[in-house]
Image 1 (cartoon, rainbow, N blue to C red):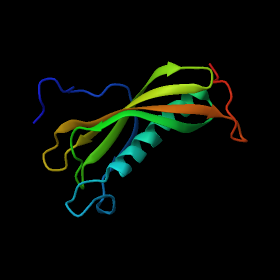
Image 2 (spheres, rainbow, N blue to C red):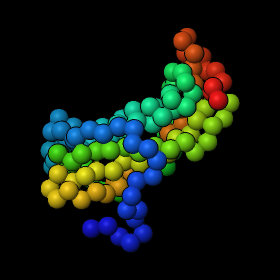
Image 3 (cartoon, rainbow, N blue to C red):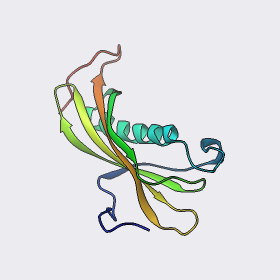
Image 4 (spheres, helix red, strand yellow):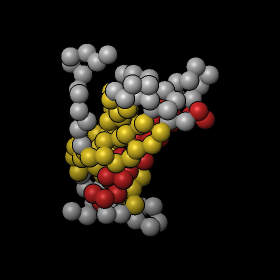
Length: 130
C-alpha cells in the first residue's frame, strides 16, 4: 500500500519497459538491484542520447535508494527527464515504476540521477548539441 507522501504518477517520459524474469531474481523471488539499475541506465541513456544527438557514456549515479522490491513477473517501466545540461554532460532523473503482476497496481520502486557525457566516435567528450 502506498503512503500519502508517495507519488501516484510517474514524472518524465517513458524510455524503457520490460518484464522482470526469473533469471534476474534471487532465491526469494526478488529482482536484483543491479538488474534494476541497469534498466534505469539504459532508459536514461535513451533520453541522454536523444538530447545530445550523439553517443553518450554514464559517468555517475547519484542518490539511489530502493523504496519497494520488484518481483518476478512485474512490468518495470522507467521514466526519465532532463534536469540539467552542461557543456558536455547531462543530468537525467530516472524513476523506476512497476505494475504488479499479482494485482495490477502501479508503484514507484526507486529513483536516481544519472549523469551522462556526450562522446565522439573515438570516445572523447564533446559539446552537447543543442
